[in-house]
Amino acid sequence: MNAATLTALAEPNRLHIVELLRTGPLTVGEVGDRLHLRQPQASKHLRVLNEAGIVEAKAVANRRIYKLRPEPFRELDEWLDSFRRLWEERFDRLDDYLQTLQNRGSDTPKKPK
Amino acid sequence: MNAATLTALAEPNRLHIVELLRTGPLTVGEVGDRLHLRQPQASKHLRVLNEAGIVEAKAVANRRIYKLRPEPFRELDEWLDSFRRLWEERFDRLDDYLQTLQNRGSDTPKKPK
DNA sequence: CTTTAATATACTCCACTCGGAATATTCTTG
DNA sequence: CAAGAATATTCCGAGTGGAGTATATTAAAG
Image 1 (cartoon, protein in one colour):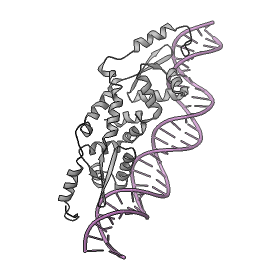
Image 2 (cartoon, helix red, strand yellow; image 1 turned 60 degrees about the vertical axis):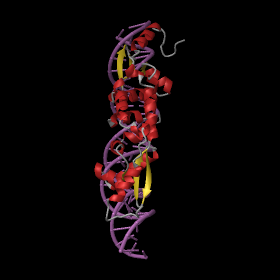
Image 3 (cartoon, protein in one colour; image 1 turned 180 degrees about the vertical axis):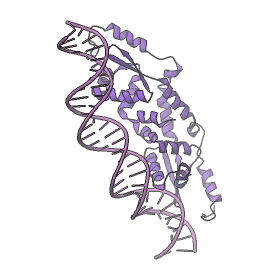
Image 4 (cartoon, chains in turn orange, yellow, red, purple; image 1 turned 45 degrees about the vertical axis):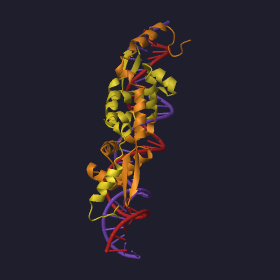
């Protein structure tokens, strides 16, 4: 997983834009209208999303239609797979860890010899 | 989906911490050692992750053992579900949108098909 | 009780980001 | 070509967040 994707999604307005585009492509103006963003902010947020590869644009006349790209979401999903054991199995390991802490008690645990 | 979770994960060092904790709980010192973070940074990043609910701590002697909490990942997974059609079905809708652009806007007509 | 290890907090500095407003660009049409 | 609509870009100021360093806290050990 790359942090760039998460950074782009972490901004609340951009997260809203992404959720809005879930239903289908929209122009800059429509995005701005529905989320009550001024035109420059809508444009700028879409730019960031575009540079992060989350969104792509198609020019039609003097409009730009933005839509979601599937790849980042697929990657995020794959990344989440590596955490799935966290809730699908019981996966705590705290007891195990406490055990290993015990076993190297008197020595410095930072550098086990 | 809440932006707070994404904000916490968006910072590269914190993303690394989360991926490191995937294998099991660790103390602050161990996290710092393995990721080459100075102690205050490790502590501060873990604090942020903790406040975001991504991580929880258990005090043992004068150490704190941090481990992942499943909930945020589960939530993220559910959120991703609403985008799954993006890549599992063909879901473009750009053609549809261009069509609707055609049909309305008598004040801004476009050259017909 | 003093020392030491592990962790947390405070403070400063700097870079980055966001919103607002103005302006520039691009495209279409008359 | 000029005018107007849709979008992009620039500049600014305020706020935020992270790194570095020093210091505080907590608990164990001598």
